[in-house]
Image 1 (cartoon, rainbow, N blue to C red):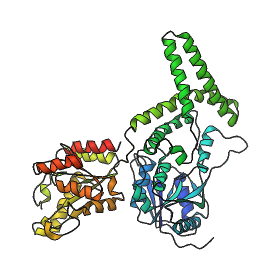
Image 2 (cartoon, rainbow, N blue to C red; image 1 turned 45 degrees about the vertical axis):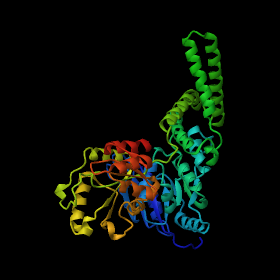
Image 3 (cartoon, rainbow, N blue to C red; image 1 turned 30 degrees about the horizontal axis):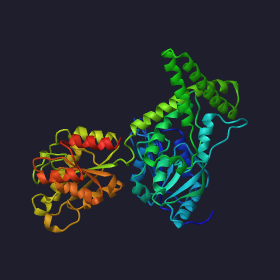
Image 4 (tube, rainbow, N blue to C red; image 1 turned 180 degrees about the vertical axis):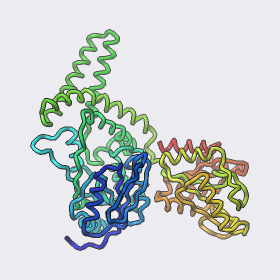
Amino acid sequence: MSESPTPDYTIVIPTIGRPSMHRLLAEIAGQDGPKPASVLVVDDRAHPEPPLMTDEPLSITVLRSGGRGPAAARNVGWRAATTRWVAFLDDDVLPQSDWRYRLADDLAVAEAEGAAGSQAVLEVPASPGRRATDDEKRTRRLADARWITADMAYLRAALVEVGGFDERFPRAYREDSDIALRITMRGNVITQGTRRSTHPVAEATLMSSVRAQRGNRDNALVRRKFGRGWRAAIGEGRGRLPAHTATTAAAVTAAVSAAAGRRGVALRAAGVWAALTAEFAVRRFLAGPRTAAEAGRILLTSALIPPTAVYHRLYGEWMFRTARREPPLAVLLDRDDTIIVNSPYLNDPAGVRPMPGAVTALTRLRKRGLLLAVVTNQSGVAKGLITEDQLAAVNARVDAELGPFDTWQICVHDAGDGCGCRKPAPGLVQAAADALGVPPERCVLIGDIGADVNAALSAGAEAILVPTNHTLAAEISEARERARVAETFEDAVDLVLGRSR
């Protein structure tokens, strides 16, 4: 194996607690080659009990993502990493015995070529002595697919640049193509590495091919974001949806015509449905094992797949009808008169009082998976009216009452100090975005005065003004032209969640 510079990398493994995770960790731990700085296992079970047990001789940290899907789990993982590279592995793959050496070589090549990512070779075991079933072929396509994240390494900076994985993809489907497409559309390159991992064939059930049609919802989101040519952009041919649409339309026409007493139309439409369904079933049967059991399954699912696929596509088109713009990833919050009642130069934690509806609204943001930061001017420190210890105690009470927040960014300077952090300067917003690992343009700042709005806009973020008695009329008018205005904090959260759907 060639000698390569020691790579600066972290391994991120999203998991739902499958036993295969322990096999994966044991394989990585037992290999020679450059060690990762850390291994971040992200527990994506909605109810993480019993806790995951990891006893492998690696630096392993277990994080939680709340059962929000692999995209969200990967985001939790890479944002906790501090290394230059992040190597993603699914919890059911098995790396080859020299994977760590190969990864070092692959990352060295990627560095030399100025690439933002390095993709592994995925191997899917063949079916011994027979043709593959539909379910097996669906898994085998991973071996030839572009940008599969089951074994993929990205520059952390590239992930920050695009805001990470789009958490609107709830399944392990299209979220990898989406992020790779966004990365490459910025002029970056993803290289093909030499390391190999084996991906198991998914266990098949009678209706698994029907359930797989839920992926049409994700296809709707990809199309909404990238336009009609998205399949060519990710290296796929034309899908089956047009034929499924024709089959479903024929079935609906037959049913409606029969109910209306139009027997001739109903018979012709039923004939079209039968022909299209038969063609679909025969094609699937001839490509598979050709057993009697498989014939029965194919006949049933060939009738169910077209309407199921069309339903999920229509549902996705409606769900993501306004999704072309990337949704916000983080909400930045002013402190006084936004999340707590303003008390000038507050120095006593007992004086912390949440704004009406703030606790409930912040809970809604967290449940949606948005990152939260507090960005606040506290010039009382520079004025000598409060001490830094008093400020820390007050903020700790705010965190206890309304938190936890993912980061606090505080300016303790006075207006005449000439700092770059005091709002309306953009420093606090930029620092919060850096700390959260998101681009400023994917942040929304909610505040109560014009300085909050100007700080956000100067940093490239969005802004929502929630006026109070301290807000000037001119600030409200300006915010209506340059940003958005909400009557209450809860209304502001509604605006944010409407964009993050």
